[in-house]
Image (cartoon, rainbow, N blue to C red; front, side):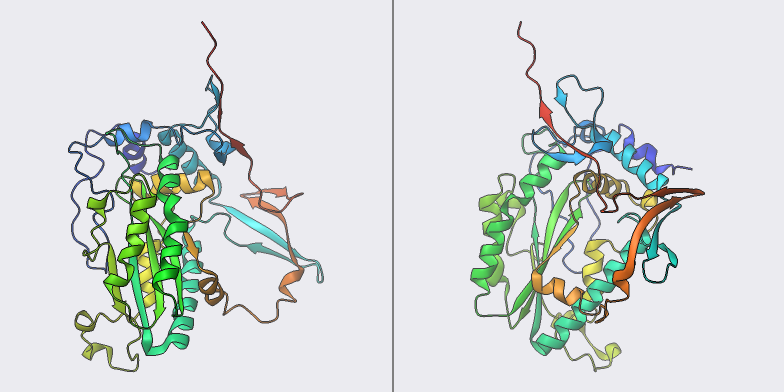
Amino acid sequence: MRSAMLFEVVGVSSQPADSPEQPHSRLSVTNRADATNHGERPSRGQILSTPLTEKDGVSLRQDVYDYGAVHGDRPLPWRESVHEWRQYIEDNRDTDAIFKNTETGEYHAGGDPHRFAPEYGDKQYAKLKDTERGLSHDYGKRLHTAMLTCTGSWCPDGEPLPPVDHLQELDSSYDAVRRALNRQLEGKRWEYLAILEPHKSGYFHIHIAVFVDGVVTRDTFAPVIEAHVRNCDIAGRDAHDTDSDDIISVRHAGADRSADLEDRDDDADGALDELAIYLAEYLGTYGDDPLQQPDHVQMANAVLWATGKQRWRPSNGAQQYMAAEQPDDDEEESHWELIGIRSGTEYYPCENADGGVDRFVTSSLDPPAD
């Protein structure tokens, strides 16, 4: 049975999409992600009525193809795309991947059929723990972290942007931001993890967790935020106050872990005793049933699903830390092959088990001449 929450997700709400939020206790959780001075905001219903994209040349899942469109290959509105995402989750509830060991002939059912399952969050958290262990070991007491927040207005002209277009524009500064990080941290060892997090509107903003071997300050990262503002057309300066802890949050994470935690005053020294937990809060890896998650999370997940966009992007070094705990000998694992999918009592063999998804590319037809 679908949850009652679906009514709010796909219905037309008369409430503003973003109401004032209560302050959070966790570090550096921004409440300013969509800060603008536009006054009255579009309603949730207006937001959900926007198409996923108005641009041509965008690759999307076939599931969100609008078969009723008469002017080209167009996607569904956001509302219907959430419907399709929810149906996808429902259809995959009792789904298992079936593997066969080509050496022994034995079979195994398991694995997450999709990345929105709660079990997937456990795997992501394990990767974060590997990163924490690796960074703590290599950087020791010198480990400092910074959380940077890059945002973009989702209604710059008073009308809601299509969510895919907003995400593409938000991401347009990414190369410039990385170049700025390279300049500011030259001579230091450092890694990063870029994280997409939805705001209450359903639109994304970006957190960039930076891990540095050595002391850094807020001033170190101010030019990085400036690079985002200069290179993202929807990034307003009023929403990127570099003096705000919501935009740049620096912590010393390399404190002595042998100390009695009950005697520590973390608020005084800014130390983080569980770096993985700190990051997991942003990633939302403590997953519940995806269909029971808040409306704005479901809206955002539908965008990730439709585009194939990943929620996080680690640096090469961070990726290596995440894989550090993998078995050294993968010889046995290499014999396992995906051969099919089991859904309920039905079995579907995989002739092409590369995980491919049917997609289409948006395009427009010129209207007929008068």
